[in-house]
Image (cartoon, rainbow, N blue to C red):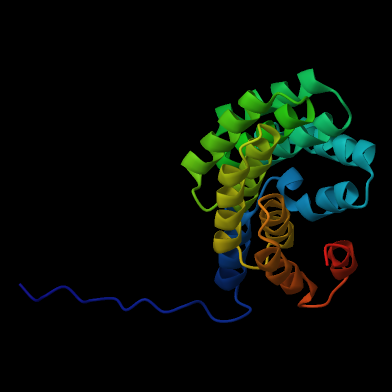
Amino acid sequence: CPAAATRTWRPPAPGSRDERAQRANHRHETRQPRGARRPRRRRRLAERGDVAGAVAAHEAALAKEPSLARAHANLISLYGRQGNWAKGEEHYREAIRLGGDIGDAHYDFGVLMALQQKWEQAAEAYGKALTANPMHARAINNLGEVLERQGKTESALESYRRAVEVRPLFRLARFNVGRMLIALGRTDEAVAQFEKLVEPRDAETPRYLFGL
């Protein structure tokens, strides 16, 4: 019998009914939950110090879409800044249950513990964050802060140096390196670190100039 004819696929003509249907289907498949589309607004509220507004915005997002793991993770430290430790822990448990970026969830829980001066629990949380993401520069830096609190200056310096290695423009970590070098009597090395804080010059530069 004759071979079956092969049909060549052609894209729908622009503006045709098939083309409009294809675009509508793509939008439906790629659409995110409504609450997932406004993370920048919620972050901006926290960055400008409106913690109560940021908490309200995150809770409103979760009321519409309870599975937003990132919103749960953000609320850990936001509630911590309000001193509401129990709510922070509640959102930590939910963020871990939902999965997503659990490295950030562990990090935020470490911040929550540090705010309560629970240094051992903070160190454990930062360690879990680094197990999930070994390149988590903020967790490395904050682990250094815990070690510093515990009087482990050499270990703190090592942790701060590692944070700078992971993120060379991480000014806070580099500033911490300088502080630890001064504490260890290594002034020349400290000055070299502080001098690197003034470049590139931007809005954050004045915060670190006093280190010189």
